[in-house]
Length: 265
Image 1 (cartoon, rainbow, N blue to C red):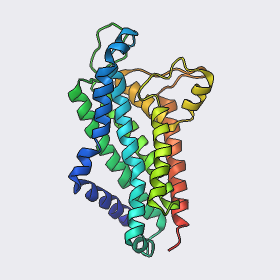
Image 2 (image 1 turned 90 degrees about the vertical axis):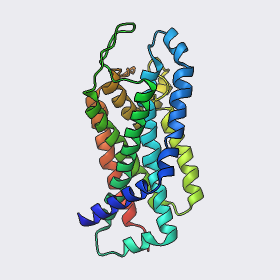
Image 3 (image 1 turned 180 degrees about the horizontal axis):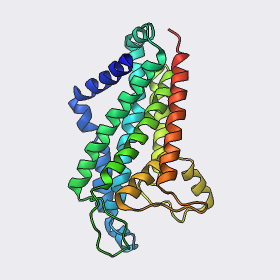
Image 4 (image 1 turned 180 degrees about the vertical axis):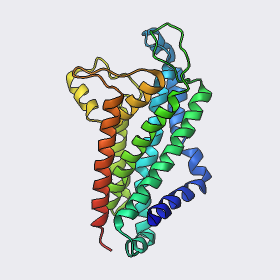
């Protein structure tokens, strides 16, 4: 447990020492929130879908967690380049403990980023509410925040483990960045973060259902504003979103541990 704690603490210290990273990493989600939230707000309201800021805020929170957690795998490439990874691999501790500490540290950093983005959303006018009919008065639901934190944690663990898996197999920094751009953007745009997943055609419905981030965004949106998405085969709900993310977290953690154990010194 000591090795897990040390690796976890290292990730947090590196995060808190980089003030520029904390601020810059919130720039793109804030731009999506303000530019799209207020820009498409009137169109969204005229379509009878309500307040777009309320709809998009859980999406940009999930986006912040996704980007921060999956790019934590890039730190492994820096450690490989500067020799720190070799020092950890020859340490007399199980490699499983090392990768668990790194992954949990990256997930914790992503959770902190997500909480900061939640504060930005609250400043922009977002409020957690109970489910209500369009046009009806909304009542605030601040008790939803702890449940939202659960989904933030699950998203962070799933994609931090995925980033660690990729970081364990790729040695080239440029290759990692290209793969991340090829993987992250589709994950984000197909998750329903920016638009509802209702009334899509059959092919797009299946594609969006194959996106693990879609279940995280749906969980956040469901607990924060009571808006669960529908599909042609089943209805997203708390148990489905939570259960699938928990299974994916276990699978990706196991995969990252196995791939990390195969790294040659």
